[in-house]
Amino acid sequence: MPPLRFKGPSPPVLPALPVVNDLLTLPLAQRMELVQTLWDSIAAEQNGPELTDADRQLIDQRLESFLADGDLGLAADSVLAALEQSL
Image (cartoon, rainbow, N blue to C red; front, top):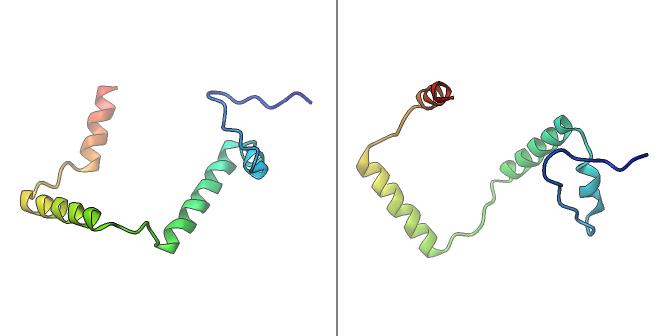
């Protein structure tokens, strides 16, 4: 059987984690489902990195700036419609 060939850039080879290399051979739809399952499991834990005081201060400053500005930006539908028109 010939070796598997991937379209586009070669996926990383991780000799220390052979299971990852096996997963990279799955069809795209199955890899996407696996990614979604992993992402959902991470989101369900609701754990994130510990913030430093400087991080908290920066987030607070940005939130205050956003609230003071009052500009909510553009609706996603408007942005997508403009993008479609430009293509």
